[in-house]
Image (cartoon, rainbow, N blue to C red; front, side, top):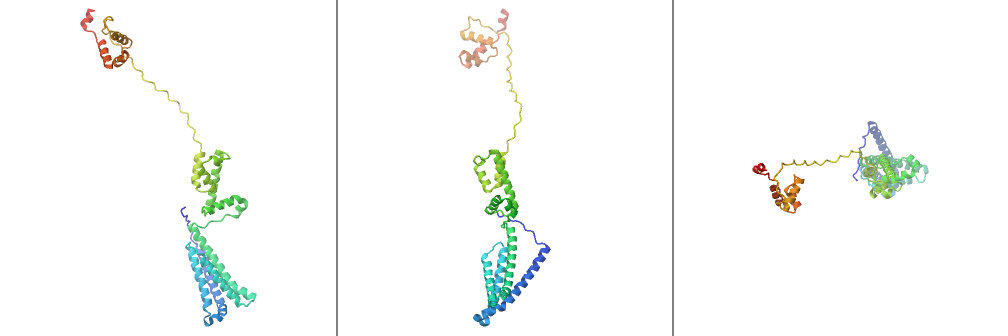
Length: 316
């Protein structure tokens, strides 16, 4: 999946002023804490370091500040390194231990020596949380929490929702709610379309996507296509069959020369009877009916339908 980045709102003027005041107070706290523990830690280290005992409290305090600064910078760059935090905590714990040792078992002195280092660590953790949260929101890696009220009202469905947020890196709680609503809508459509055993009837990939809560946009599109009824076709009046154009009867030709039946051959006699019954017959059809070739049929048709000479007509 592509990394989702969300634009963070810039700090307002009031927020910047408050952050500046907090930074000044933190600097004062760190200075007072370092100054208060400097003498105590130096006295504890003097038996081992002699005149150079001041190096121990100075080095420890500077080391804590350096570790804390680098750890906060890496958090800001969305590249946290937990080892730096734990190392800073270890040096702070060592400073507290050295300060408590200087109290020689006095409970009041122990509390006073431990108070400022604990405040220092608490402030550093608050700053680290703010930086990490802001950088995580900008990088799209900080997952929003699920409200307590939802856990109380619907613990099982909330757990499944939270599980999908963790598994599929859904950082926005409102986006997770929208995805859950679309998933349930798709389940309702499938249940209405296929019945209670929709899992065995619906396509396997849709069942997987809806069960695991992945690729919900594609799943919802597929479900909509499956469950949307096809529009009813309007009754269109039947088109009347196209009438075949009737062949016009060939005009009856004028009386043609008739060959005496006694003279005509059998084919000619049969041809004359066919021509009398069907004046518009073609030579090919005549030949087919007489069992001769198309050319012979055409010649016979031409000869039998040839007009009689004018002299013969007058004589008759």
